[in-house]
Image (cartoon, rainbow, N blue to C red):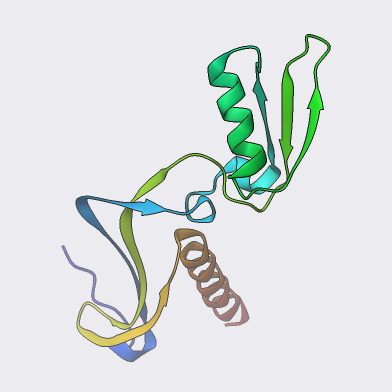
Length: 139
């Protein structure tokens, strides 16, 4: 059963989400909500091993990251990286789109806006719902 709207299509907004199936793409730390990017992180290496020596050399000379270097009581090298810079992980995500259309199922009046991420889209939706509630409460 379909409930018919009380107002014309132009009085409505439609919030839509789409995701491409099985299409993985490279993503930035910021895009995926990476905690290392948001808060900073530490990496610890044992420079008595070849692997640890190579990793520490990379961080110091080629990583391009901002860090402070220290040592543990056990003699391990600790790099403390500041927040707001790309971590060392290769992030991947699925392409998603977040739209707000004018109108409803009866008449689509085109895209009002396209959000770059789901958080902005959800915030927009929540603000829109609050406006509707305010109007209804006023009578």
